[in-house]
Amino acid sequence: MSADLALQQALRARLVATPAVTALVPADAILDRHHRPSPSPCIVLGETQEIDAGTSLQRRHTRIYHTIHVWVREPSTEGGKAIGAAIRAALRAGRLDLGAGLHCADQRLSSARYLRDPDGETTHGVLTIEALVVETGA
Image 1 (spheres, rainbow, N blue to C red):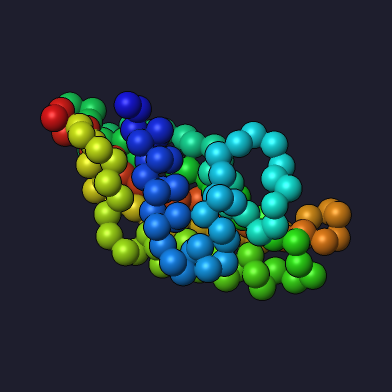
Image 2: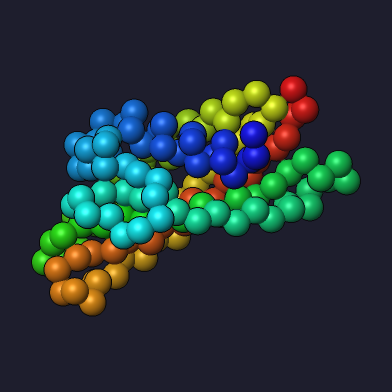
């Protein structure tokens, strides 16, 4: 399995298993799909970028940037920011399990932006998860 797909699956597994997240967003509204979601609130696993971390000649270290989108129909950005904080806390709960052959050496919420959607009714949070993944060869 590719490192970015393993990370995406591990992120979703962590979010749906974290009560502080599912108290704000139902597990069935933590999604991986391409079009704008209709449920409110929801979390959409988004785009990824892989970059060779350049930490060894074996080229086994990859830095992955994974975007998570938060959507909430609300008059302010308060609910979106609460969901973002719950996601940050979920990531701090321990290393993500990426399965055989991959090790998540580091993970963090490296950026978060909260925007008012042009519809005037929706908050859109754009969170970037940064992870350092090592291929272990197992």
